[in-house]
Image (cartoon, rainbow, N blue to C red; front, side, top):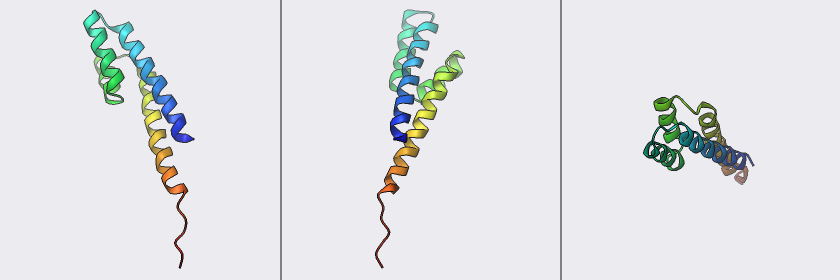
Length: 87
């Protein structure tokens, strides 16, 4: 459940970052490049975009929180089905 919430948060943040990249680009080429970087290279692309353009802090934090929840949820689910060893 936690991993699904993280996935949803990461997707919404990534889409928001793509839209922000398209809105803040000066030329068409810059808009396309930043949109593709933000779409295919999350969360690293979002981090680079934020430090280069100074835009998109909130969606970047959403993507990072989503990835953390996915890792935490996936890690917890790996241990939820473990049964104690028989003596």
